Length: 178
Image 1 (cartoon, rainbow, N blue to C red):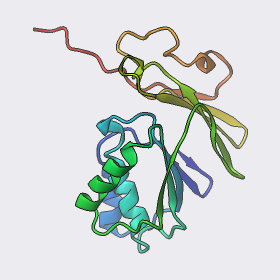
Image 2 (image 1 turned 135 degrees about the vertical axis):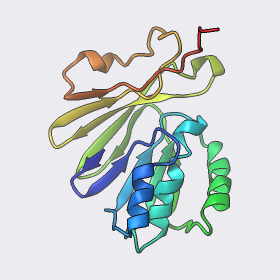
Image 3 (image 1 turned 180 degrees about the vertical axis):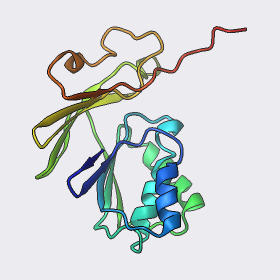
Image 4 (image 1 turned 180 degrees about the horizontal axis):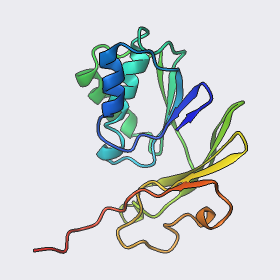
């Protein structure tokens, strides 16, 4: 999701081939201010490497830094270790982590992001979230992963209201085929 000239990313997968292509082409990327992680599964964190590579290289992305909003503070050290192995070196002054909880988690002159608790990781006793994004008079809802059985409270109630765009991410499902 890109808002005006303010990059706001919702990474949801393993490395971002589009970012890699931009880097390979030597193109500039608009500054990314914040990244929002829905939950602490690897498939939602690995894509950060490419974003941090961009922020870490001023020839690609002139940035004052990026705030990575994470739902669990203890994963910060693991993410940083992963970065050190993949991106050498990481400019720590440009990459800041912040733990968030339910409610408004980010707001500036262009965008407001609200975290809504989901049931995706409830059985593990860990947090997971959907994001409600308000910008330029538009309302976007991003579900994040849903639980396997679509439990009550998992599907954001806000999806049933007046949103301009609802992005529903897949629910992890166990295969029933033999």
